[in-house]
Image (cartoon, rainbow, N blue to C red):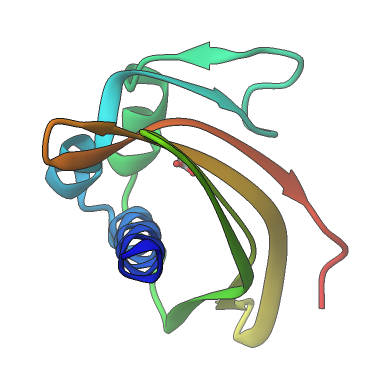
Length: 130
Ligand code: GLY
């Protein structure tokens, strides 16, 4: 049972990252609580509340070329209707025609709302590039 929930939360986290990578706003909105809070480098020294701030990036043109997202070293902590998923996110992409990997440490909090888990908070910190 606990393992099933952890697998579900990892699958949801992967789905979220794929939605971000693909610019899939409807999927992102479906997975996130409208009042989600965020601490990330795009909003220096701020805690962002809600989804509008994030939509700006989904509305930008997609950068061309191959892109792959990998979630590594995942850990899941479950506490009733709350769950914390932490991992290192690797994004492989092309920059000036050369492969580049960008690494970030992410902590994402999910809350069960009825039958579904919704994403309610995250913190992302850049790590040294590979
Ligand atoms: N910057 C949007 C997200 O990581 O969820």
